[in-house]
Image 1 (tube, helix red, strand yellow):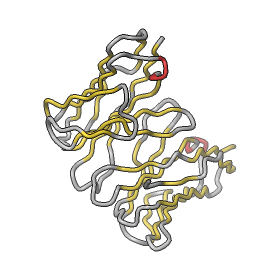
Image 2 (cartoon, chains in turn yellow, red; image 1 turned 30 degrees about the vertical axis):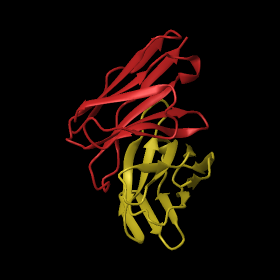
Image 3 (cartoon, each protein chain N blue to C red; image 1 turned 180 degrees about the horizontal axis):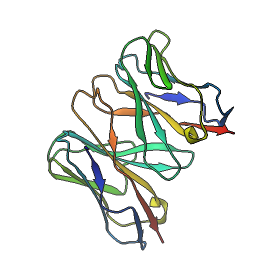
Image 4 (cartoon, chains in turn green, orange; image 1 turned 120 degrees about the horizontal axis):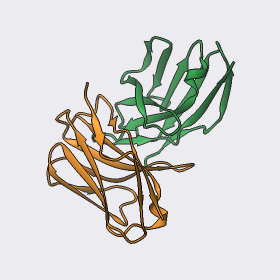
Amino acid sequence: QKEVEQNSGPLSVPEGAIASLNCTYSDRGSQSFFWYRQYSGKSPELIMSIYSNGDKEDGRFTAQLNKASQYVSLLIRDSQPSDSATYLCAVNEGGYNKLIFGAGTRLAVHP
Amino acid sequence: DVKVTQSSRYLVKRTGEKVFLECVQDMDHENMFWYRQDPGLGLRLIYFSYDVKMKEKGDIPEGYSVSREKKERFSLILESASTNQTSMYLCASILSGGGYGYTFGSGTRLTVV
């Protein structure tokens, strides 16, 4: 069974701090990695994608990928209360168009 | 702006009814998916389709069927709704190659009473 694992949280950080969200995956054939943000009662929205080892930055968000360790992370700098949401890690099932999702990490940013 | 549109945001149905959930995408994506999402259980794949008239079972297909007669439309059917099918249903689509991730619809909150 191919799996994506995340700590369910809640991860609580003060406003302005760096939030660090982590994800591990089991399928070594995976090539594409995604982070989705989901507000309560809403559908997931794609915020970051990463395909190569290393870091990828987009505004306050940085995705990090280490394929050897089968590890993906998302850093949110200068966290804001509006970042409070559940963050889903998703990994493509090797060779297929289907994504496997983690259960999500709930982030709470407090003023 | 590209979109995945789910026909209903909220639905209330009675036990035993046949329920149709519709999903339409305007991105010419080959691949479409139906998930349900429940607290503590995450996203669970019900059915998916890689092409017109093609369907594959996901992890929890029991009690559901699907139809894909046109590329842009993927319908989820609850043959005889039961209370344990009360859930948030999410449709998603993706371009072949998978490199751009899913685009999700806004979701349908289904309550079966």
